[in-house]
Image 1 (cartoon, rainbow, N blue to C red):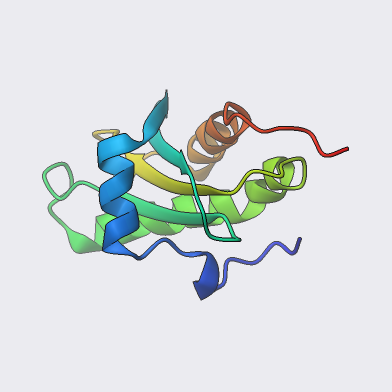
Image 2 (cartoon, rainbow, N blue to C red):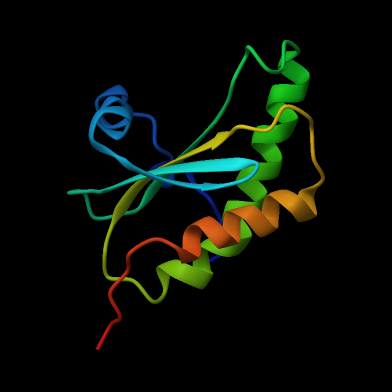
Length: 121
């Protein structure tokens, strides 16, 4: 698996996002909350969100989303190569302040490692 994050791996379907909020399970590793749900499509898809109530400036929200996407792009191989389960993932930034990339990357990896994956034989 390459370390890219193309469009076909992005969670954009409102139906999938709604099902995540209704039926999804969550993992919280501050400053990131991960909503996950096993998916029926052939690829794991991920989405990223930052609350407008916590960060009024769109520039700040976009910066945090860029940091989360980059952390996911770098860490997804760590977990997805071991898994034969496909997920819908939604990463929500729950922190009140902007943190550095190192903190986001560490929380992202911890959240991904808690996903229930089965080992390939």
